[in-house]
Image (cartoon, rainbow, N blue to C red; front, top):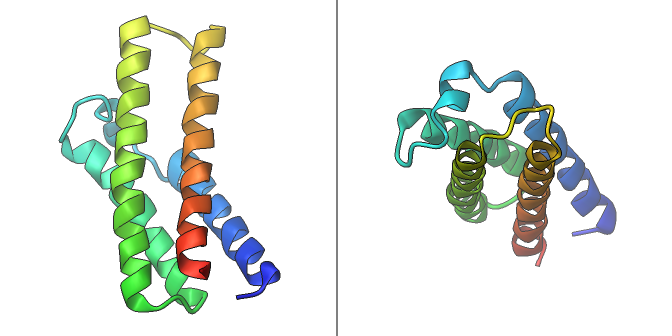
Length: 124
């Protein structure tokens, strides 16, 4: 795999992330990410994983490897969101507070580092 291929897939995953986290996330998903095992949080993580699966397949990643990457992302994404939601609920932060934005920043960093881990796996 070329560096250009890896960067293109990373960019596609990041664009997908922006849509799945900020455009396509429903209030039902958002409201229930702090309740472990709730279908809303699972649906949100599943949306991410399903879209990543389609992208990896579009980029020519083998089905077995793409499925493994999607399952990995689903589990990791779910738990990142769950932990952030629990933290935010415990702290009672609002979007006017710096602690809220630190939590958002760490959440997004963790998601994007997940994509780097997926790329290492599929490009190796």
